[in-house]
Length: 337
Image (cartoon, rainbow, N blue to C red; front, side):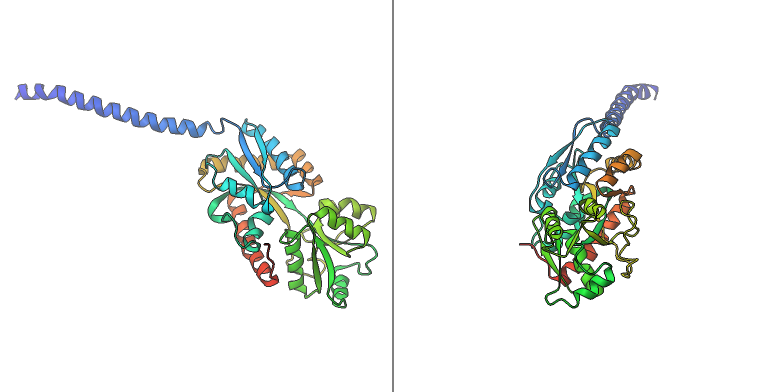
């Protein structure tokens, strides 16, 4: 009996040794994975901006990239990939590795309006991307040439109903947030407004200053200097509260259109399979940047109100805007070839 027990002992020691080695390999592998995740980021991060350099979207992205990179300890480079109203650059990020090293600067026009106005969009906003965090809202404003006799929103709406063919309002282009805001205003008030699309906000501003068109719907940043100098008259802003940049200008809500809030937002998104731990870290550091008084002031000067918040809050806003703008696009028959 003792002989059998002694004979089995070496075998048990071998099996125990093998099991111990296997456990060590398993734990070592898990530790390696954990180390790899903890090490993120350990190289340069790319933030794709799907527009040309120089616009408000691009400049806000560069500002955030600089400060966010400092907090993460890695450089964040801007990669401008313009085309098709942001569709081209956004689609590139959709197919990028979901490792936290490729992000996209999301603009509401691209993410929640393009899917409705383009016959085919090369990405699905909800299925292809995970929201990281919203940077802020660019407040929109309706401005008029001072020669226009209507000075309030009520007067503009009343005047529009006397105009054969409608009262013209210009925007930076078909399907942009200012265009959608104007169409929503028509639907909510029965105003007789005629949209005049331009290839950019600059030309629209030139024409309203010159009296070629009576109204322009644009971002506060683009109209601010002209309003302060008296070259343009501000009708209303479509934010929930008055903007600190132009505190004397009423909101559309104050002017008689309940719940009329249409801002143009910008935020950061990542490929859909990006690990939750990385998304959470990005959101935490982004919020820290957005709570920095220096960054908030720099964004304010760009016409953007910083809006730190959670991933879930940004996700809910994206889904909400996709639904409500889809209804406006359909009702107005807006399309981009």
